[in-house]
Image (cartoon, rainbow, N blue to C red; front, side):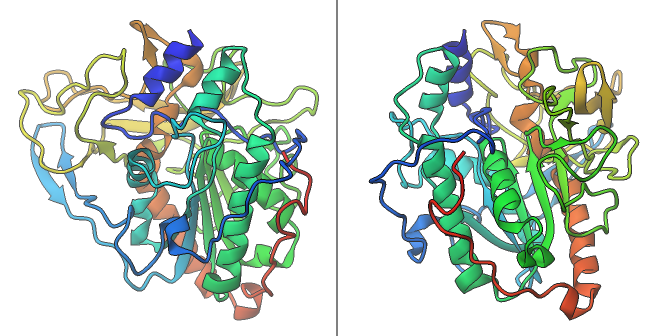
Length: 420
C-alpha cells in the first residue's frame, strides 16, 4: 500500500505538488553526517531554482481565471513587484524521483512544477530566493514507509546542510539588511523548522525575520500557547500585521478530520505539545474565506478520479490557475482528532461552477484520510498568504531601523550544529 500511495504521489500532473510527501526533517533525531559529501557552491547561480533578476522557474505564467458561482469569468493577470522591499526564501517539499536517498542538483520538471504552485506567486510581495538542495528523495521515502529503508548514510543531514549553506550564502551576499520571509512545505518546512531553531531563534538575525510560513507540517507549541515547543522566542502569528512570527498549518477537509494515524496535525505526547495551527485567512482565529489558486488543468494523481471541469457545462480555460471566490472557507480546529486547518466547501446547487475540488490522496479508489489536503496546502491559502505577507511587509518597514537591522548571523556552517 505504501508503494502505491507514493507512486501515486509521484505521478502528479496538474497540481504539481503531489510529490510533496511527508518527509519532514525531525529536529531532534541525530543523524551522522557523511564524511565525504561535497559542499555545494551556492555562489554558482546554477545552484538556485529561483533568484532575482533572471528568467528561471519563478518567472512563469501565473495568470488565473476567476470563476464565480454563476459561471461568469474574468482574468486575473499576475503582476510581480519589481521593487519588492523584502525577500522570500523557499525550501520545496519532497518531489525528487532520483534513485538514491538524496537527489542530484539538476533542476528537473518536478522542481519547476512545485515552485510554480507554491512559491512563484510570492514575487508580488518579495524578491525570490529558492535554492536547489540534495533532498531526501521520494524513492527513499517509499522505502522508509514500506519498512525497507535504504542505507541513507545521513541523507537528511545532507539535505539540511545544503539549505544551511544556501541560507548563509544568501545572508552574506544577497540580504543586505532586508527583511525576509521563510517559506516551506513538508520536507521543506521540516528543514526550515530546524534552521530557525538553530540559526535564528533568539539570535540577532531574528530582527530581520518578517515571518515564517511552514505549511504541511506539525510545528510544536504548548497547548493554548503561541511560543515554546520547537521555537523558544518566535511566536505564532495572531494578526496579519504581526511581524517576526510563524504561520504553520496542515489542511484537512472539515468533513474528514485527521484520523489517529494521521501524518499531520498531531502533537508529541511525551513532550506535552500540540501541533500549531494559524489560519492564513484569519490569524486571530475563526472562519474566513480562502483565496485559493488551484491548478486549472490535468489529472490530480494516478489512481484518483480525473479533475472535474471547473464550469458546468465545461468551457475552455486558457490560464494555468483558477480562482473560486466564495467556494472555500477555513478555520483552525482543535479537538480529539488533532489541531488542523479545517476546509469547508460552500457549494451552489444548480450553479454553473464546480462544487468540489481535487486534492485528496486516493489509491485504488480508496481515500487516504491520513494525508488530508496535504497536496494543496499552498494552493488553498495562496491569496490569503499574499495578503498577510503584504501587511507584514508594511508593518516591518514601518519599524524604526534599529529594530530591523542586525549584523549578519552567518550560521555555524556545515556540521556546526547537531544534525537531524
